[in-house]
Amino acid sequence: MACCCNTLKNLLEKVIETALSQAPRAIQFVEHPTEELLQALVEKDWAVLEYIDTPSDAVIQCALNQSGWAIRYIANPSEALQLEAVKSNYDALQYIKEPSEAVQLQAVKENYLALRYIDEPSVTVLEAAVKQDPQAMRQITKLTKELALHLFGVSAATLGYIPNNLEVTVDEIKSIIISAISSDTADEDYIRELINNQAIGGRQSKWHIDLLSLIDAYGTRAVKKIAVSEYLKY
Image 1: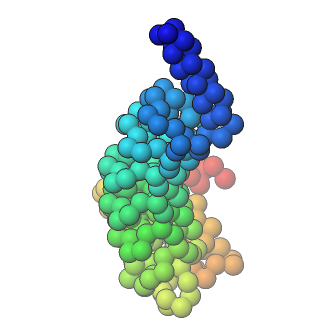
Image 2 (image 1 turned 180 degrees about the vertical axis):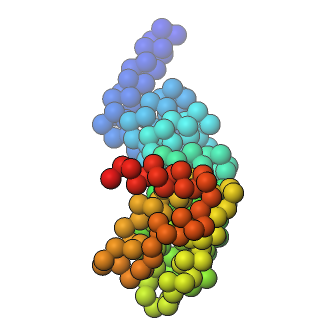
């Protein structure tokens, strides 16, 4: 009798496995599925997580390994899980309620377009976004003159994305450049970005600034050394 029951049980399990292989989301109709079965299912289709009640940490991890979007089906995810989600898919941020600044930062570091899913990004988040890509300036809905100048001081490449209606002047840009090149703690990446910025000094540019003359007059020895190495490339 026991043998017969075991045979029926094994047969039933195989029928269930076969059915789930064809339609993984049918897991919602299976009572007491095994951990092994659940992990196998989410490895095939992370969206199956939606139909699993109280998934284990291991099952959740399997789902996130497939897609950061799986965070949408995790109740009250920890910050660690949120960070993992946006590392995999920056736009998983849209499925996270009230993400912390740390999670927002991670998302914009992956892709500046994550700004689309942040209602009121902090200056710190905006700084990270423009460093990831200066096109982030286009995603800032409340861009003021003061903020634009600040972000230029963070990433020189943002200069080409400062809209005319902010009425930023050449002298204001010069002032920021002088401050950057005369600093004893000048950021090497910023200086190189500045030197290679085609928005500065070109014939078609509205920013008629003689950068080389400014570096010669105000640049520290370290900045001048960087400038020489950059200009020797051409």
